[in-house]
View 1 (tube, rainbow, N blue to C red):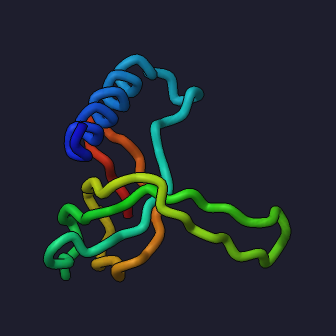
View 2: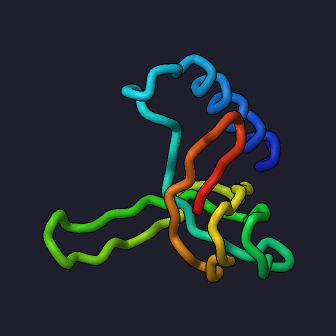
Length: 103
């Protein structure tokens, strides 16, 4: 199976999960990602960015720094902030009506 097929399956499963999760108390589907350049990195805000899901691991202590490890292939998320994020920036993305969003 190709990576694009696996991503499509994951998105469909997340959409199905989001459609069955209607109460705010259950939370929204989200994950930590790092922005990356897929072909030409965007230079404006309010557009889609290539991102990769990462795990964030660190010691639970004040002032500890996390280590980010890639755990997925590339997918796209809409940036809704006022300025373009730097390549390699870490964000939490949330699934909103079938679209990954971050700011």
